[in-house]
Amino acid sequence: MTWHPHITVATIVEHNGRFLLVEESQAGQPVLNQPAGHLEPDETLRQAAIRETLEETGWEVELSAVVGIYLYTAPSNGVTYQRVCFAARPVLHHPQRPLDSDILATHWLSRDELATQPERWRSELVPRCIDDYLAGPLHSLDVVREQRP
Image: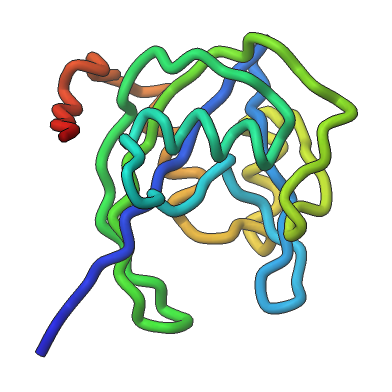
């Protein structure tokens, strides 16, 4: 039996106590998530996090740390995801940039505002990653060792 976890990245972007979240469609329902997505061929984890954040939010970001590495099995479909979550600071917004087709909107929400809407979380990883970011420790980007040909 072959088992292939899905490798994903997510980015925690904080500005003035608010977090950049995307509202996206999942099974026809709007849900909240960090800017996140799948690693693509010939791409590093850092490149994927920067790309996904730009594609989903229109924000260029500078990665600053690794929040954590998470192994999550989605109860809805049994698929296992390995998520590498990065912290980043917002650098430049491109408000006219078209966003990925499944993105309905972007929001800057406080942790308290997010806590009032658990039915809208894409998964438990959404608040968990923010909580881990807030509680620390954050890890150096050097902890991610990527060898490219």
